[in-house]
Image 1 (cartoon, rainbow, N blue to C red):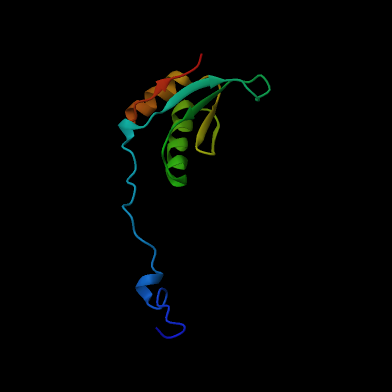
Image 2: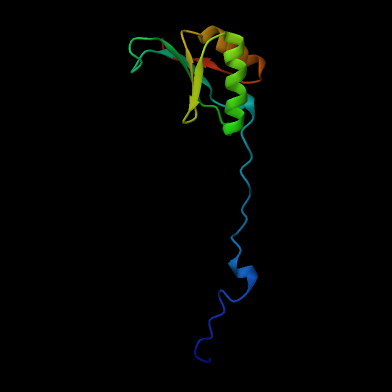
Length: 108
């Protein structure tokens, strides 16, 4: 074998990353969505926290807009968690159910 006979990276096919099976998103009805009121770290104000949604950034933005419009209060989406101002658990559960999720009340 001649010196420098490596051919591992000599073709374009060897530079391609393996394309494994793409993980398809979990169906809405199978996501573990939890809705709970909390006061921790909010200066004594109650906020409603929605966790467990498997959405991209655009999906969070659309869902947050629907929730804020329906509830009539402010809110934010950060780090995969939606926070709504006030104790809005019942309204959030209702809207998420209409959207096709199976949310559960968590906490108090």
